[in-house]
Length: 270
Length: 160
Ligand code: FES
Ligand code: FES
Image (tube, rainbow over all chains, first blue to last red; front, top):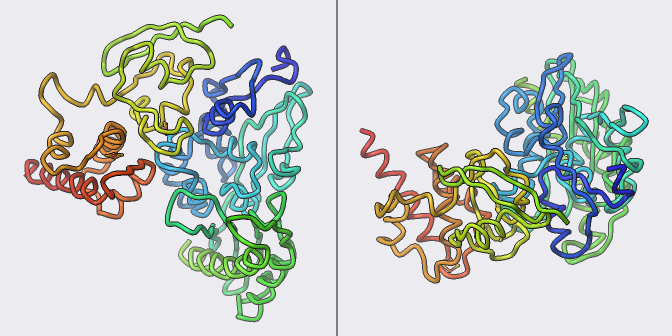
C-alpha cells in the first residue's frame, strides 16, 4: 500500500471496489487482497465477546450460530447486504469502509458498541465504530490504515439487539432509514441502551438522547415516545428519490419503537 | 501491467491461466477459458446472470478478480450436467418451461443448485428470497420458483 502512494486499494469482498473500478470512479495503481490474512478472515470468541475479521463474508457471519445467538441484530443487519451472491463475498469491514450513510451494518454495529481494531504504518489502535465515518464515502482512517477486525463485547443475561430498515421492496434495496437498538435489563428495568441510526445524516449516528430516554425505564409508552422524539431530533437527512426529509425523520421514530420492542423481546429470552 | 499466474480448479478440472490484474473472474471464464455459459447482465452484482460457486460458496463472477481465486475451486453452469445427462434442475426447467430467452437461466440454475445443496427442502419463501439476486426479465419468476420447488419435492420422493 505504501509503494502505491495513495493509489492503492484494499480488496476484501470486492462488491463495492469492482463496481467502482468498472464505473471508472477509481483506477487503483495497486490492489491488495486481504483475504489471505488469517486474522482478517476468521471469527474468534474472545473475552466473552467476538472478534470478527474485517474481511469475513456476510454469509459466514450469518452461519455462526453463537454469534447469531449473542448478537442477532448485528447478524441480521449484515445479512441484509445485497443478494445471496453478494453475501458470499461482501464483508462487514468493507461495508463500513465504503462509508455509505445508508449501509446496513453501521447502525447495528453502533448500537452494539463495536470497537474496531485498526492497523496502520504506526501500529495498532482501537476506534469506536461510530467514530469511523467522516461523511458519505469518507472515513477517518489515516493513509495506509485498514480495519483488521471488529470486536463485539460480551452479552450479559437479559440483553438483546435488533436492526430494522425501511425499504420500498422486500429485498435487495438500500435503506431509506435504518435503526439498530441494543438493550440490557435488570428485572424489567432497562439498565443500558444504545441506538444507532442510518441514512438520516451524512454519517451513521449514535443517538445518545434516545438511549437516555430508555435507560431507567420499563419501556413504558412514554419512554418509547421520548426515545422516538430524540431519534427524530437527531435526523439531518437529505431529500432524494428514496425518501423526503419529512418522511425519513418520521420513520426514524417509528423504527426506533419497533426495533426496541424486538430487542426487548429478545432480551427476555436471552 | 504484468499478468498474474493463477492455478485453480474449474468444474473439477485443474486449470492454469495468466490474467490481467484488472480482469474479473467472469472475463477469465468467458474470454480465456471459453466457458461462456456464465452471462454478463450488469457487471455490478445486481442481476446474478454470472452466478458461480467459489469453494462451494455462491457468488457473482463479475465481482471477483480473476487473480483472486488462486488455489480455489470454481463451479460454473458447465459443471451441472454430467456428460449428456442433464442435472435434475436443468431437466425440470426444460419440462416446465421455466425459461424464455435463457440469459438469466445459467445463473438461476447455479444459484438454485447452491440452495438445494444446503437446504434440500426449502419453503417457497426461502426459494424466493434465495433467488432474489437473480433477475429475469422474461418469465415473471413464477415458473422458476415452481420448477425449483418441484425438484426439491422429487428429491424428497427419491430419498424415501
Ligand atoms: S453480471 Fe454479475 S451480477 Fe450481473
Ligand atoms: S428467461 Fe429471459 S431473462 Fe430470464
